[in-house]
Amino acid sequence: MRCSIHGDHITITPALKEYVENKVGRLEKFDLLTDADDCRVTLRVTKKKHTVEVTIPAGNTMFRAEESSEDMYASVDLVTDKLNRMIRKYKDRMESQNRKAAAQPLPTAPVHEEEDADQLVRIKKFEYKPMDVEEAIMQMDLIGHTFFIFTNAENGQVNVVYKRNDGGYGLIEQGV
Image (cartoon, rainbow, N blue to C red; front, side, top):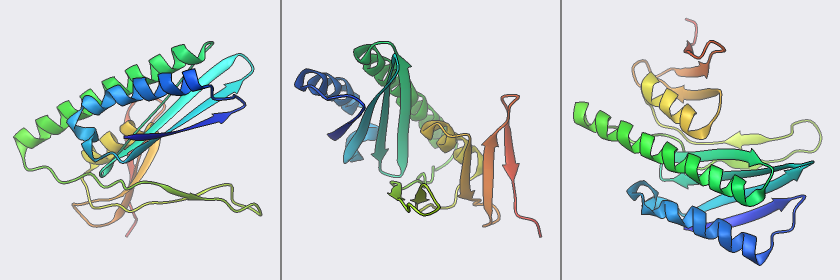
């Protein structure tokens, strides 16, 4: 798996680059990441906060994690530990679903971003396949967002799942 490492207000030293590549490279032990073409790592420094964000598109699934600390190397350790837990949890869920019924492939394709300086800050385009609400919630948790738009496999309509402030989940369906 190739890693593209970018720095935001930080110079990427060869030692830091090698450390990131080694830590992220250890995630390749998971069978789920055999389809992962490349990953994107962003290292960012703001005041005394060192943030590391890693995005790994793996087939129809996208794994994303972000962690911060006062030391960049510690942030790399934290984010790879978080990804490790996330991938294991996903793998366990998929195995559980496979035991219950034949699982459908998850729908998220790699995100393509475009920028327009006039009004919009970012436009994200992605392809998706029908899924049930439980799969949509799992996908939303994997990418670390608070909402997820998907085509509901039960009714073929575009729906939105979102994380509520009370810790639960909500579903928005189209009106008739």
